[in-house]
Length: 234
Length: 234
Image (tube, rainbow over all chains, first blue to last red; front, side, top):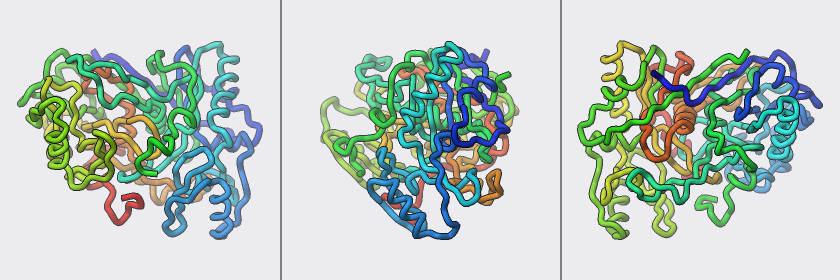
């Protein structure tokens, strides 16, 4: 009686990801992809594969702060060792997305220089290997204003329009819908997090059943990062 | 080869929901629930069933604004006809969550007075009808700072701890995880939105496969609404 709308799959990965790792090859080895699948990839392995890893001295907060600033356009808030900054991509997040978890001791990962481009590269490789029409989302874990807890969001996308634009769509009474631009990329990113293991060993999540109307060209930086003029809280 | 982690189901509902509607009866009629299932219910039908519907005069912005203020503690921002307010529950959202879409002409819905309590009531009814251990999440659609597009978030919860607290958990190198309080309730809410139809005809989404470690007592107002002292942006 229950009709499946969406399915999410993850598979623990044994390999350590290093610079130059072939993520597409690992994905097609572990997942049977079909047309319309969306592959969600955690930022950590993309950054490692792209060599976006730098050494840090433990407990040297001053040099860590300098690194955060070098990855940021602007510092919005600061409390203790936590800085909320705006990255060069326009993301507002903790410590410019620089993360010590699930990295080798004494190292941190930086965000990919251009996560949309990282997603496009991976998408092209996956499409070449499988012949399928796919989407790719690269995710990271961000905090939010006003609500406790972090959620995974999309920092890069390819093959998928991140915003579902329902402007002009009517409800069942024929009235125009109000909240009409839905960030499905962030909803997919958060959904994928629900099947991840927190030890970092499930960097890939396959999402099956996304309406194929959402496949197409898109960009997180262009479509989701809110411009200053439309942002009431920047 | 693909191992299912999470499945989401929705079923179009034909009935119009009015005051006093028995949501639990409609759910068990349409879904075969099993232990561990989480039922995601859109705010609109909860508000209608609870009679949280008021008449408004079309194009009378002044009385609409007064209604928004009466549902709010505080107005944070205002642009055109849009007010970003903090509701009496502590939610920060557009127009205090008052919505004209998918309501009868000349009416709007208000948020449930106590969405956690609404979720608890529905949970008890569902558990009574099915004998299953379940979770319930009531969702609404909110905008966010810094990122375009809206996403569905949890405004009420029962039978599920909305925050997955991994503080003290280590990564695969034995280092303490950094982003350790994950708002799985919001991730589930957003995931459920991906299988909804925007005409409002799929108010119920069944989420199957959430780790049973997350079942338990929880509250959005107590656990997710961020206190002023821990909020860097209020």
